[in-house]
Length: 170
Image 1 (spheres, rainbow, N blue to C red):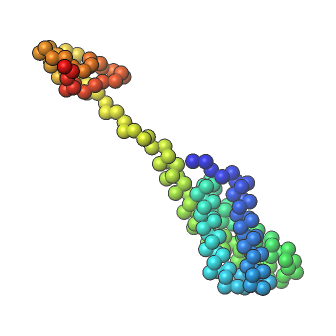
Image 2 (cartoon, rainbow, N blue to C red):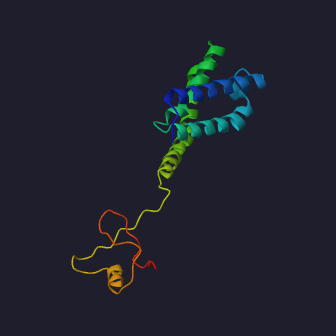
Image 3 (tube, one colour):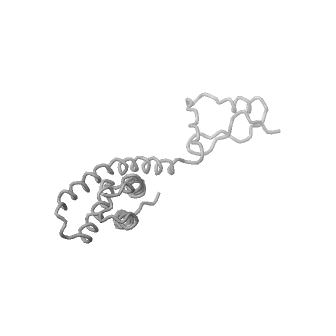
């Protein structure tokens, strides 16, 4: 399975957070996006799905993808209103939302590990090991061959391929 580079995951997370903040604040005509109920009912669950997807496609240190969108939202909120008196409290709220999104980020990682493990499963069944025998004993095929019947191919010990001893030819 190919993974997403860290720069790409950061970019996706930051753009999703910033565009979501701007879109909701413009659609609802609010100064801050979290003043709208659309932020909590639609945007946060959607952002959690994006973070889970990033945890799947970039599973290495997936906790980063939970905080990147909210860092971008904090940057956009500061650019929109640099004199906000409650910005320190807003940073704490953004950090708590990032902590909440740790759950979907960490939930994406096991699915990525399971997916890559399934990709390595061989498509064929493994060969069964050949039965071991002592030096002087005869196999069933040798006993049949000694009785005057021909067997499909000779029984060979070791790493070479072995046919079934009961397959008789003409």
